Structures are given as structure tokens and as C-alpha cells.
Length: 87
View 1 (cartoon, rainbow, N blue to C red):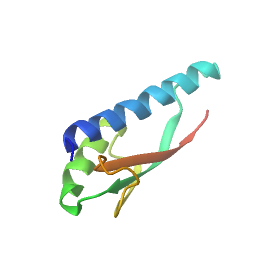
View 2: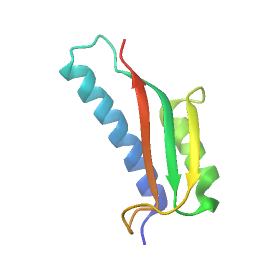
View 3: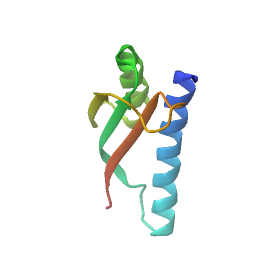
């Protein structure tokens, strides 16, 4: 399969990059804030690691939902999506 830690870190970094890009495109004074992330895990034993890394990137106060199930691409062990607020 793949490297779970690498996938989690890359997913979080991609979300941050996307938020920064959106902020720049909209000429916002601050990067949009995530309000909620949804984390989809292929393997339930990865929950604690995914939660710890997500908190490190997005902060402990963000609402997080975790789901275990199939992921659309076989090579992926995790998918993350979220909702943000534009100030």
C-alpha cells in the first residue's frame, strides 16, 4: 500500500497550502480558518496517529470527525476534507 505518516502529513500540508492560496486569491487579510475536518481512515488502528498529526497542523480546538471505511483510491490510507470560514 503506502506510507501512512507520509500521506497524513502531505494531506495536511496540501490543505494548508490550499487555504493560503484561497486567501491570496481573494485578497483576504488572513488565511481562512478551518472549522471542521473530516478524516477518512482505511485502517481503524491509525486513528490515534491521524488525530495527533491533525491537531498539530490545525490546532486542538478544531472540530474533527473520524470515519473508518473504504477510500476511493486503493493506494490511499487516509483522506481529509474540511470546511472553512472566510473572514
